[in-house]
Each structure stands twice: as C-alpha cells, then as structure tokens.
Image (cartoon, rainbow, N blue to C red):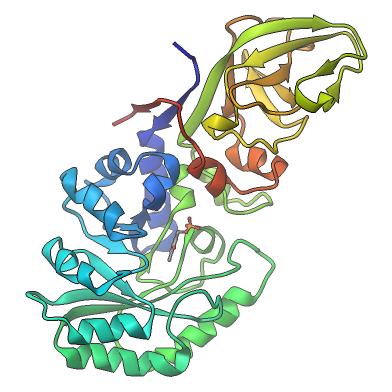
Length: 357
Ligand SMILES: *Cc1c(COP(=O)(O)O)cnc(C)c1O
C-alpha cells in the first residue's frame, strides 16, 4: 500500500474550537466549507457537534451533505442561495441563510415559505466582494421584517485584511458597520479567524472561525494566540528509495537542484497529485526520521526528493512528515508562495485517517 496519508486529529480540532470560544467570549459557528478545508466536513462536524453552536458552509450542496449524515445543528449558508428555488429546501432543513444582495432580498419577499427564515444580513463594509451597500442596509433590514418571512436577523460583515496585524482597515470596516447598523437591535457577527486571534476589541455576538479550527495561523508573522493552536492535519509518507550521489549531480525534473557535496537523496511517495504544492522550492522544510531536513528539486506528480545527507538514521522506509505538528502547514505554504487555506483545500488522493473522535 502506498504510504502517503493524512491523519486528522479531532481532539486538536475541538481544542481549537474551544480556543475560538475562549478568545471571543462569543458563540462560534465552525466554518467547515470546502469539505472542512480539506479535512472532511462530515467527520469534523460529528467531532464538534456536541459543543458547536453551529456550522457554516458555502452552499446548500455542502449543507445537505451534513444533514444527510445526521447533523442536526444549525448550518449557515455563507453565500445564501444562488437561485430562488433553493428556498424550500433551506426552509425544510432549517438552514440559516446569508442575504448579501438585493436580488436575494427580493426573492425572499416573493417566495411563499412554510416557515420563517433565519437571515444573516451581510453588509459590504469595505471588502467590496459581496454584501449590501451601507446605504441599502437599513432599508433591507426593514423590508425583511416587513416581509413577515423572517424569524430572526443577524447583522454580519467580513474583513478584507484582518490577517495584517499592523493594518487599520479592519478598524475602518468596523466603523462603517457600526454606522450602517445604528439603531438596529440585532446580534452581530464580524470576526473570522484572524480577527478572533488578533483583534480582541472588535465586538461580535457570533464569530466565524475557519482556518484556526484546523490549527493553522492566518498570519505571516508569529502571533501569541495563534501559537496556542494545535495542528489538526498531519500529511505523512515514507522514503521509498535512497540514492547516493557525488557532488555535481542533478536531481529531478528540470535539473533544478544540483548536489553541492556528496549527498544521500531520499525519494518520498508524495507529489502534487496529492496536493503537495508543486511550487514548493528546494529548502522547504520536511521532517524525516524525526529530524528536520529539506525538499530538493522539483516536486513531481507522485514523488518528491529530500536531503538525507545529514540524517544518517534515515533510510528506506523512514517516516516523513510533510506538514503537521512539527512542520507547520503555514511554513510550507509561505515557501510555496501560497496560504495554508489553499494547501489544505488542494489535498486529494491520500487516504484520511481520523483519531480522537
Ligand atoms: C470562509 C469564511 C470565514 C472563515 O474565514 P477564516 O479566515 O478561515 O477564519 C468566515 N466568514 C466568511 C463569510 C467566510 O466566507
């Protein structure tokens, strides 16, 4: 059997969820969109269900997968519905629904619904992706109330730059939000992971942690609260071949790495077809036989090469951690010019093994 696999530590997932609660003092929707950032949405939801205030996903397809697996907790659709004909299913399954556009508001006004909806009314406070314009916000709120089709409204917005700790954009966005919701007495939800970890003074009755649940930091620099996260996924494999090479020999596609000294090269069963980033360069950290070493040369589809020269105890069959509790996914991501969000979401082909259920 090919040794590549991802271990998912559900105990660490619960630890990180509790940290989000503790840091925010708020209710927390566990964001498990995109198959829980590649960690397996159903297994993660089951592991959190006893304690979670609810879940958030991107679309009704993801939400239905949770209900089909027997998850009865609240589930928020972060982009609401894409077509008005989703509304009956949203009602049937008691999904909570973001309203981010006036066309969605009109669709609710025109729908005949058997039960009232829970709406999370989204303001564009400056990110300029989705969300209602501040000038439309109070009017939309009043129209939802007047429609008689809404049981509860939560006021929400989303940050564009909360992961930049020295940047004042989040503070400006809060000011826009506060002005837009003036006089409305409803619960609010603003904070994503970087805001939960790094912006303690921003109010939120509900927080929406995603990446931090999986134990990865959203920040590029060290941050004290992010240091308390426990990595959930360990991506591991084994050395399947060892080469002894003199100095001056090229390794792998494109001869991107040439040995500078007599070297021992280990070949690991892990490649970009598993989701390991192809753009990770020579020098990207790995752990082999318990010791830190580095990637050498180009990542192939099914294999990659690592340096065993200074790891004499490593050889054929040695375990390799590509990321996990020793090699942080966020560090691999930085090397590859991406973010831990993407390297988790790209994971495929490897069997997933769950512990700590
Ligand atoms: C994905 C998402 C989140 C979670 O963001 P993280 O940075 O992973 O914590 C929160 N809110 C909304 C609206 C999202 O789309």
